[in-house]
Image 1 (cartoon, one colour):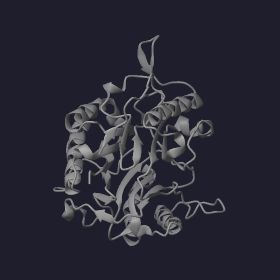
Image 2 (spheres, helix red, strand yellow; image 1 turned 45 degrees about the vertical axis):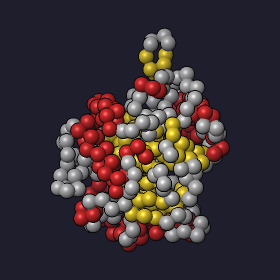
Image 3 (cartoon, one colour; image 1 turned 90 degrees about the vertical axis):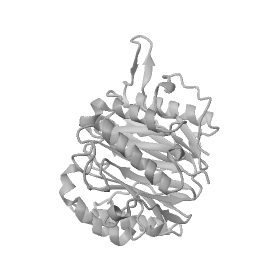
Image 4 (cartoon, one colour; image 1 turned 180 degrees about the horizontal axis):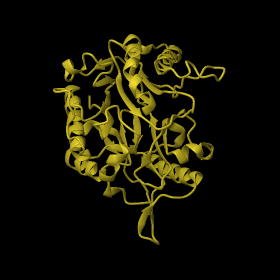
Length: 367
């Protein structure tokens, strides 16, 4: 059963104004919305989020602790931390790390912007479970001696990080066939080579492909690498959600996977699987409406519904950020209550220049 975290003492701003929950409890875990340093300034009467990187990180963690406290948890129970950093935030990474209060592995994504323009970071966490999930540390193509593997070769680096995922999963008695979700970051400079990475995915992850999200970021967590990969696996049996099967037959990811009632939904865009075209060109609101309808269809194919969503991550392109409020309207109209926790960031580009938004989602079925 999906349940919002209630009784949160949250003096920074009024969360009831937004179409997301501060936290959702389901599947043995607490899923939190991404937090920035945004807070109401009584002097100006506006919401602000400025300050040094360390100050902003401190406020992010104060907010996270407030939500976790209401859920009866502490930061020591965090099993996932993702830090979305602007270029300014990346340059202040040591200051941000100094304010970090969770001891689990941290993933980094460099973004072109956040919804609050003066914010340099947004932090999202998951605390507790899901019980059978194994979350690997973020994988970069860097060997144990610190050297970059297959320097300048996107295909070689993508292959290496997948093989490294297999080596790390073996420590848990698992293999790449147990992978349920991946998030891959590459840069626009390697876009022309991206299709060539499919062979390694097909060979190493197929035929029961995981859910997957791929985004293009201006910078990666290390200056000399071409890819960053995040991997989730499960000790529970993996089910593939069947949706638009003809369209996905040639792809190296599944629409969604299910493991122990947790549904991992691939990054969903305005790509129409029935025609191969793009819905709502130039209109982020229209694209968001199509995306969330696709997510609804995938969830129904998994035996659930839109009310089972616990978390969404919305990646929007910089040109769509000005109209991002249109996405909020879509969420209010189509999502169930309680709203899922959510994070929204502006990344450099999506894999098609026609796409303005990609939404990755996690749901927990009421089985």
